[in-house]
Image (tube, rainbow, N blue to C red; front, side, top):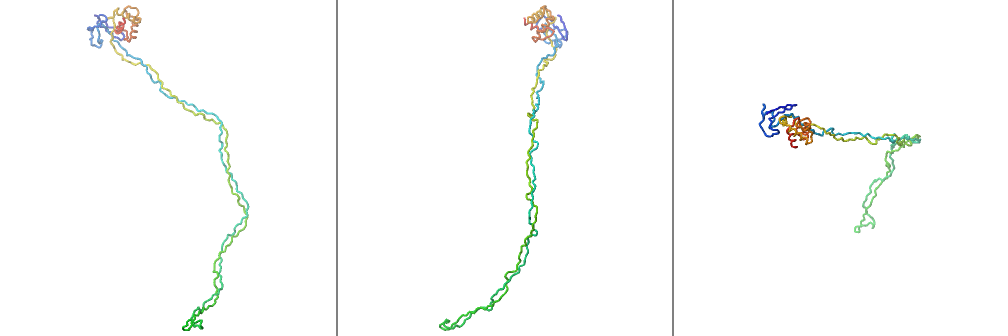
Length: 327
């Protein structure tokens, strides 16, 4: 039995006990100072295979992501106002009114002027008398019985006596006396006013006013007139995105034990089988000479890459199985 250890570029290759090439049955592992449970040995090792402890760099993948390059915004543009020059009649002075005074007119007139106003005076009017005659009774009239004479006066045939009732008239005396005809009184006498004539100037017509209309005054001038006011135009600028490519780590770096062909189990016939399979798969391994040369290694790595197989400087057993399936 023989064991060979090969260390190259950070890769630790451990050669296990060799049985006939590509044997898959289990045998007791060789001991070369390390136990089967040591971390320095590959787990679940199979007899007849060699293993290399490889540094597996982190696995990355490329992702495309839409990111916001520029947020949505708004542009504002100002369209200036439009003007034009036109002729326009403008008011210079507004219509107004003024008052014109018409003076009073005068003339001469004869006028009676009262010197002394009318008045009244009281005048005593004495009583007036008149003479009147008046019958004054001195002796009142009366009647008495007197014996009558003659048959005419006989009133009682039985006695023959005649009695006559004789009336004696009253006796009057005429008396003359003064009586009031009109009583004494007070008489109001009107005293007329006293006037004199005078010539004087008087106002015939009073002063007046007259309203005179003053028309408005205009003139034609050139003015700049607003045709269209300035306005604001807002344009929406959509958000702009861009696709960025970023590399995302899928797996962390690790140390991995990989089953490989090494000097122990790599025979010339095995290498020729690999070269033949590569050629059959369309890869140029160079001469079919049973030697892993540069051309064979290039073809082998290309085959591994195209078939998503572990790619390294070793001929790993996963690659060997894939190539063996070709033949």
